[in-house]
Image 1 (cartoon, one colour):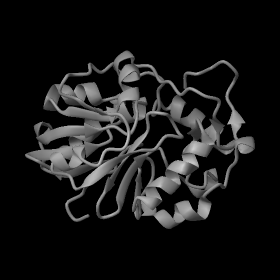
Image 2 (image 1 turned 135 degrees about the vertical axis):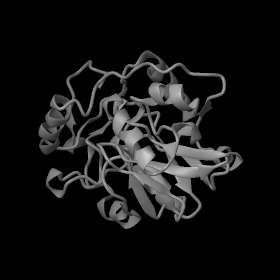
Image 3 (image 1 turned 90 degrees about the vertical axis):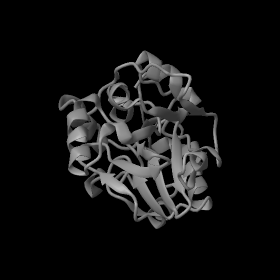
Image 4 (image 1 turned 45 degrees about the vertical axis):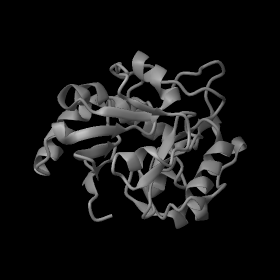
Length: 250
């Protein structure tokens, strides 16, 4: 996509898509990355006020942590799954269900992320406005009314409120539905934690069937959808390292 602007510094990768009278920002980031984000915007010659919409693939702090701060500067409208609205307002992470961690190697990686404060379990609460644009599931109309040639797909598996943005040219911005992490992690394009692995792989197949060709994950560099086909069902429920019983928050 020629008009795509990449903002790829930091843990979470962000992208700007042209829309009516400005830009749609795909993903936010951790509150600690906000100054870095503003620096990247300045390097691109873009004022925060030009950001009219913020698309959040789901509610965790490394995606939505600076949403409130960005809103203060830009008055942007939030596009998010309706199930993300409550945790965004309370600032709490929540993934229901059993789920588990992909493998033991990523536990060490997770400790590193927490110790360096790149990932946190709370975010600054975001006030949901009447002008915001929550979606209930698949939506083929909303983005087009904003001047973005694409659609929104419900893609649960990492979390129930996960959504992806699929452009007509096959560019798919999928949040944590997939990851392109270091090979030594052995994630096979999975994110670190999966709440429902059956749903997760169904969502992989869904974006492929809907026309995804280049995958833009929130963590890691873009890659071909062929990688998802190659690693489909690489893990099963039995492979996951379970979180402690009774703990829904993560």
